[in-house]
Amino acid sequence: MSSSTKPPYLRDFAQCKQHVASIFHNDGWEVETPDSDQPDYDLVVRKGNQVGAIHVKWLISPVQKPQILRFLGFLESEAGKQFNCGFFVTTKGFSAPARALITSWGMDAKIHCGITADDQIIWVHDEELPPPNPPKQGKIYIGVFTCKGGVGKTTVSAHLAGSFALEGFNVALVDLDPEQNLQKLLGDGVDVPKSKGLGASTYVAVYDWREWHEDAARDCKIVICDCSPALERNPKDLISKFDYCLIPTTLNPLGINKHGQVIKDTVREIRAINKQAHLFVLVNNFKNPGSQRRLKLLRDCFINTYEEIKQTDDKFHCIDPTEVCIRSSDQLYYWGIHLLEHPEEARSELAFKLVGGICYPREDFISLADYIEREAGWGILRN
Image (cartoon, rainbow, N blue to C red):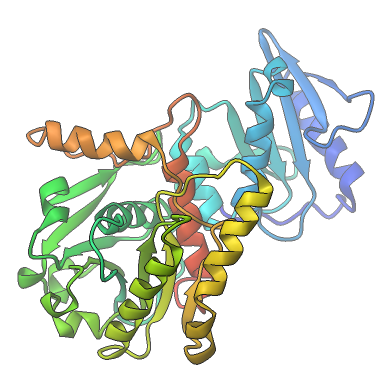
């Protein structure tokens, strides 16, 4: 279930924590309250060889993804190694990006997330994900375009489609580039598996733009277009349909101004065809400079480069890389290498698999999908 009515007797956090403790006790767990206040967990439970930390949230709104990731970070830290399982329990439901993250872990994950009810905790894996709220009438078009090659448009297109599929949306990918990089990597499509117990995988189909017709993917509400870096090589009728357009770039300390000119040219070319789309500059392949001072210096230089565009275009958004970006990761690199080395194999699951309990690509692209929904007047997806 995606939400739950808080039991009326849970008036505050203390009552909520006692309620959760009683449920675990009745289920055969030994329950302990830490001697001192712990910011990372509220209860300790033991059963057989299991030792778990419980993080209790008494909330009036759904849990967001960063709250879960903070608890997961604690479990994976040195202090959290004393626990071999963790439980995140809330009085309300979980946001769509949070649920997509939880269900992608599978039922054997170290962390389990649930919602309090009268005499039980309803775990996220107990039921199928409910379908998302109906989108706007017709399809939503998202373009991925930059007037420069080699910035990761194809990788961003494929994995953004995967993140929306994890949230429960039917998504189509359209390859606009005559070089057909998207089709070379993914062929006719890619499977985005659901976790155990949640039914079959979601299949994201890939279409050649010359064969694309809205009726070809009648049940798809989101269409993501991987564009050619030469705007004139993209079909104008599809460019004109974009509701949103992502403009990937890199955060090279010596190339920010140069990249800034590329972005300005990109915006100008898009606006010659499409004046209504929201445009987002996204930092791809981000490498942390290693200190907060350097990170702030890079971030401020990056944001300031686009001030001129923001002053004249109220639908232009420069995504703060300290909030949302696509981090450089071996998982994305070796995902591409694997597809090139084994084109005959069944299509990949994208770079969304956990490696050592961590998956930066999955976290980053779910965060990106969440950002688009929250920040761009994206209420058309969810009421």
